[in-house]
Image (tube, rainbow, N blue to C red; front, side, top):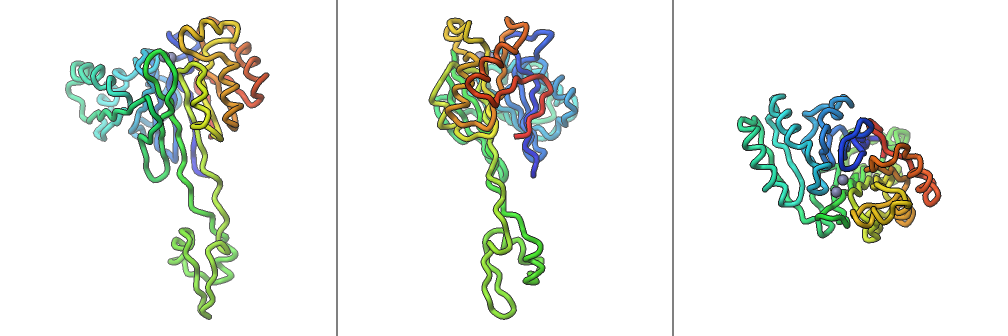
Length: 304
Ligand SMILES: [Zn+2]
Ligand SMILES: [Zn+2]
């Protein structure tokens, strides 16, 4: 199956610690890389995971809190030093350009490439990126500042060819592509054979959803329904629910409830508060509601 993976570069919240880097992930869809959030240190982790900067053309920023975007100026500068020439697209709410464009102009005057800001409205779910294999849709979240998560959806793939049937009917290679796209095959004797004889359906398209940062927010559920993998923040334990409410974050129990209601294939929790020396407490809490939960960790590789 074609590659669809997620690399966790950082999964801590608020401030970097010796244990966690800040929020940043890379989605690898068929060897094209898409960064989600860019907390401090993201470029180091990108290197540590031996990823290729040239394959990165799009960065999606959920919201303008420092722990999700302070890594941008450093990364933009590094890409210039590495001699990048291809455009780099930053998808974020409109304030991002106001804040970062002057910084880039001051510190990265001679950039050999163009940074293109693509603004989206974090208040509604909309398609913000699409190519032949991928669609990215925003997921409005409930946080102290305008925030959106992202749904990465693979586009339906063409069906698999059944070699034996191709051979049996002596289908010329020039016609295989049309058959994959649904055309029938007409034999030398004039018999019409439908494409379904020659193909079996492709696996259903895979989906990955990123929801951070957010308070418990049920409007997320229909948007992420049926995703293979859901990354949801679980900054706090239920014992600190008051703090979670005050700061518009979620508890591990709340993250698990969202995953359960959305019937997700599995849940990865992250954006951990530094107050927990052992995150097992968060995992145990989530497991009670949703058994297919795992803790995020730096350099984790998720096959979606
Ligand atoms: Zn955060
Ligand atoms: Zn935040």
